[in-house]
Amino acid sequence: MKLIKREVDEMNFGIIIPSDCPDEKLVKLAKELVQREETMIVVIDDGCGEDIVYTRIYQMIEEIGGTVLHHKHKLGRGTAIKTGMRYAMKHCEKLGGIVTVDEDGWYGAEDVFRVCDQLEEHEDSIILGTRNLKKREVPAFYRLKNTLASLRFRFATGISCDDVQSKLRGIPQKCFDMALSTEGNGYRYELTFLTEAARTKVPLIFLPSCQI
Picture 1: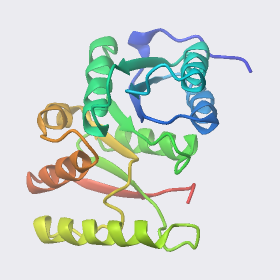
Picture 2 (picture 1 turned 90 degrees about the vertical axis):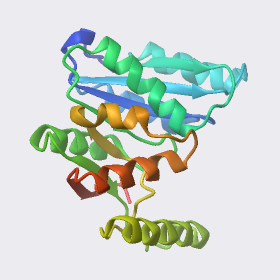
Picture 3 (picture 1 turned 180 degrees about the vertical axis):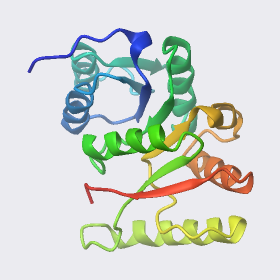
Picture 4 (picture 1 turned 90 degrees about the horizontal axis):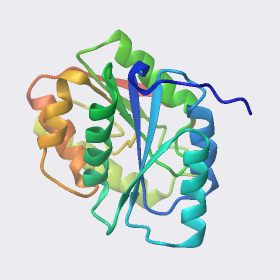
């Protein structure tokens, strides 16, 4: 595979991937993501420790051009996202947006790139990559959790969204400070941030995922 040589300050998007149990799906995603010249791939090892399998996966990420940041102990998804954002904001002078994505294969590189394109087109909006959770391979318990979260979100904001727990999100530059100041360390952080953004009238764009 031919890698594209890139200068950090020429990149426009930071792709933030919180990680706590990486496998080959993360490596596959990273290999696809680095092919887009204007993206910076930042993986956050959220306290995986010195497990030899995880260590090798993170080494592979770095070998293909990604950056891996390490939390000594597990601090939670929200903190991992903030760690990645701060790094991208420091090292990308022309950073136009942040895209967060899961390591577990829910989304492909095509989905991530579509979010980048939407951020470029809608510089004032948060982009949420939504999934079709009615498919049979989605566990019933997960669908129930997401339905309840979506109901809470609609009650708090008046906005209907079938997949508020989606981990594929595009954050525009104007929302960086809000994202960093939103309280929460774990998985609830993302719903809290989305709710706060909606309450302050930040436009939300829902983008159906190609992957599922």
